[in-house]
Length: 181
Image (tube, rainbow, N blue to C red; front, side, top):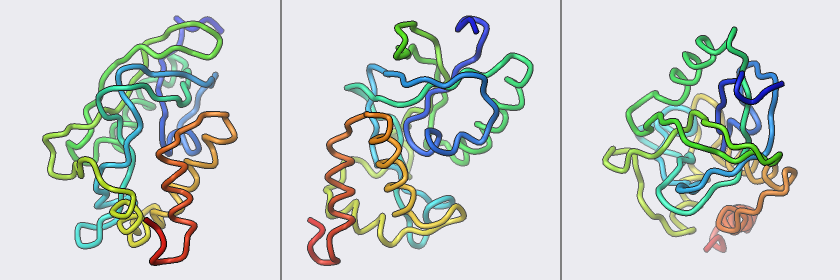
């Protein structure tokens, strides 16, 4: 199918392994100008306001390997509505169209969700020890925060996408409590 006939969504976290919408094509992709960052306090899906978890966002700078999902025009409007309900629970994400390079070589414009660094749920740059603590304690509507992080790590490995910071975090999460940092 022609890439120009599709609407595209870029997944960099749970969208990789649980998109939740119908798509006709998926392919590894690279987004330049932003990187995957575990720096959003989760008050709903992976934590609560009292015991927040952490979820991924796209922070300025660098690049991010992920998945691009091509969605047919006939289901684009309900797909976009679903994504907005899922991703825009608060204003911590900014929806934007960004160019992503598909593994096949084509560049497409894809919906992405960038971090709103001015939002109160933006955690900023955290140490691995701080991330481990929040992730281990976080649990929300979608389950344990640890599952979210480790599922993302595993799916990135299967795709052949290296995210060294995330791999260090996964190793720290696997360490016994007290030895995470």
